[in-house]
Image 1 (tube, one colour):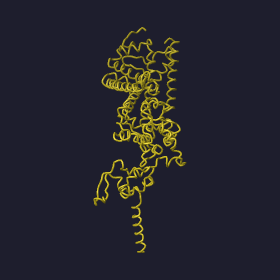
Image 2: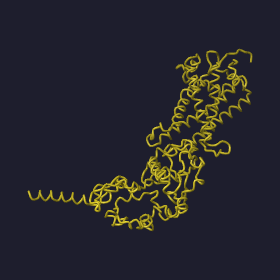
Image 3: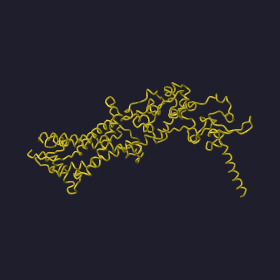
Image 4: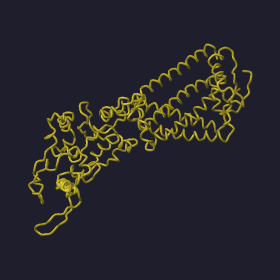
Length: 206
Length: 312
């Protein structure tokens, strides 16, 4: 608690993207689970309204994804997503060891955040997987499901729509699990609420 | 040798000659009835005016010869069901009064057709809105053309084909102003507007049968024939969009479709003949997701407990 150094970690565009994405993804998860489980929710929200909400949130997330993608191309923020080949496995394992054991045994964070390092290795890997793999897949399959007539009828012996839907919901599931862990890990900071404040104000206390 | 060659030519010639005279649907031009009843117009010798005349055929009396050859009754000739006196033209007016066989006259009580449950169908049909409103006038052939019918639902393994064929039967009248009015006496309801509450209306129309929502599904009958009145039609999405989907008891109850879903063991994880949003059709994937979720949750809880104990 000796250091009070502040770094402007999250520029405004990034916070707007993150906010839009958060609202969109939360809506998608809630409405997605509702559709998937077919909860008889007509007395709260009707099925067709749930579908409409899911579609609107999907379009919002697609739009915000482009903000993220282009933002990372044209601003210096993109460099935080580049992985170095040296210590490809060692670095995330060290970070995982810190989370699982080290932090309870007086070990110092192996990859402390700084102006040059915004993400620890585990964070970086999971963000890359989510933002450059899961989200694009879920956007593409989502658009396909929005216009089912463009999907090929048969993939081997399965219905094309079925395969698309399985990919879509599987990615949705992994993104939900990511979100759970993302929110929990975010509570590990100087204080449990510190990181949440940072993503709103943009300033991070190091 | 020469004689044998001549006889062979003669036999072939006679064979061709005989074939052209047979009552076969294969060549409508040579069929006594179809040479008129497969065309828009027909010609005959008017003995009063003493000249050849051409007339327009009543469009409802024109038969689709391609469909006729494919239909379930293809082995029957016209006069097996219609009076042999139709062979002369002009047809005698009293022929119009001839009672025609109904489906049950042939199919009822016949053991070889037991699996089709014709009696049960009739019993169910008599509860339907079609029978209640139009009575005996609403014959089986209003939907199932005796000339061209194919039992698609029992033979095809293509769901879209089954759906298309079945819906065509309903749309024949319900999407045709003239035909609808001919039977009911009033204008037909506007199908597209009435069903516009369905999300992806067009997709629903091409992927599920009208009867899925408009009949009372009963387990003992392949196709329910109790067509309900419109106020009793199903309007609940979850009836189909759920794990225990109604479609399993209706559209997918046919063996030909069930077999198709079962035929490949390796596919059982993902194998599905269809996709219906909202139904957990892959129990294994569902179980897997619950396990992953619980492990993640447990990890978070255990980690939080340690953080609280260690005050981190």
